[in-house]
Every structure is written in structure tokens, then in C-alpha cells.
Length: 285
Image (cartoon, rainbow, N blue to C red; front, side, top):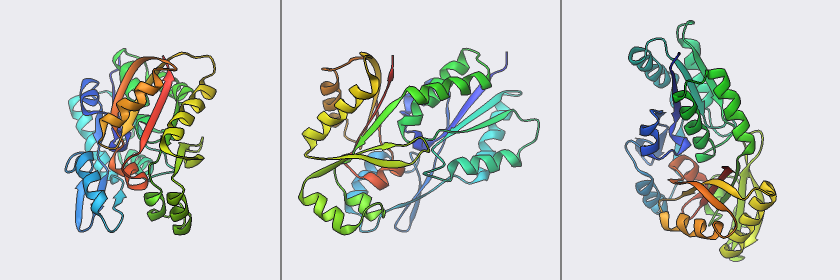
């Protein structure tokens, strides 16, 4: 039976204990904050990032791992697991060049390496949950091509929404104009975001007031899931687990929760959405 090793990048926002439990190799992206260049999740935590983001006068920038970074990890896996297959799953190509970097790395490796690179067409734990499921299936001995099919099916079943607390970071990142951001802030507008089939973030609705926005998110999930009552759920927060637990309490009044994961919306996505964001990922139990 061929062993399959799962690789991803830090934008998957997989809790460290889950990544370790399933033997997932996580390649960090890099953050540029002022003059400092820091490895996401290695040299700066989510809490440290959001504390610094609050005080930043300029928006931090991010950069994907280089092909050489991937090559080092792939070669390490080859040494530790001779003959193993590698399945490398990454943030949407519509949001980052991370997937392209992995493809370039593949072209630099030996032709006999069994390496499959997948564009998740998603972000944060929206694809982190796919990576975890891939690792579970790999541990059961499922072949790579079958894992890819199963993960793609799960991606189609999974539903996700982000609730943004402020328009400030969307404006700083060039997603909306300054006037629109100011007007929206005065009206207490809370945008609900999602990711389209091409892997691009878009605004689903704009709701006045956070309580109404939370209620609307739950309504959207009910519409998406139809008669499904039992769900798995992951809630991403910006280093504020109490906000995630509060959303779970609201959600539990409408669905029976099976697997529950709390995680941080990492610095890469956080650069564009800011503190106070809640990201909710639901898939059938």
C-alpha cells in the first residue's frame, strides 16, 4: 500500500494540533510588516499579527513561498518516506500565487516523483477542512486520485461565509473606495463575504448592524443546506475565540453540531478583512 503525505500552506489556517495529529506539512507564507519580513505562523502568531495590524499605518503585504521552499519540503518528504505519494493542496490561485509556486516546484523535481498539486479554489479553513479530510483518507490508505475526487466533492458540499466587522481593510486593500468605506462605516454596514466557484472573494450582502448580520448569515446557511439538520462546522476568528463561541451558540439553535473546529483567520486573509471578522465553514456531517 502506497503511503500518501499531505502538504499545504499556512493560509489553510489549520490549528497546529490538527496538523500535527494528521501529519500535515505546512509551508508558511511570508508577511512584510514595515521593514520586517516574518514567516506566517512561525515567526509571528495570529494574535501578534492582529495587535500589530491595529496600530499599522500601512497595510502589511504578503508573499507566497518560493518554488525552492516547496522543493525543500518535497525533498524532505522523499527522504523520510521513500516511495511515498505527495498531495499538495493550496489557497485559491485567484487569491495568491502560492499554487503556481507549487506547480513550478513540481517541474523542478525528478519526473518519477508521485506529486499531485491541487488548487483548492478557496481560502482559510474553507480549504483547511479539505486538507484535513485528505489526510484522514490518506491514513486509511486511499489512493491519491481517489482522495482528490473525494476532496472535490467535499468542496462542492461545503458552504462558507465571512462576516467583516469593518470596511477599513477592504478599503486599504483597494477592494472598495474610501468614500464607500466612510459611508458604510457611518451606516454601521457589515459586509457578508464568500468565495465564488473561481476562488475569488466577493460580497454577498451588506447588512446594517452586527446582530442582524449574524442572523442573516444563519439564514443563508439554512437556504444553502436545505433540510440538512446535522452539520460539521468550523469558525475562524481573529484571535478572539469568544466571538467564535458566541456564533456557535447562535448556530446551535438551528442545527445539530457534530464536528466543531475553532481556528484563527490567519494573517494573509486578515490583512484584507481585519480584526473582528468571523469566518464560518459548514459541511454535512
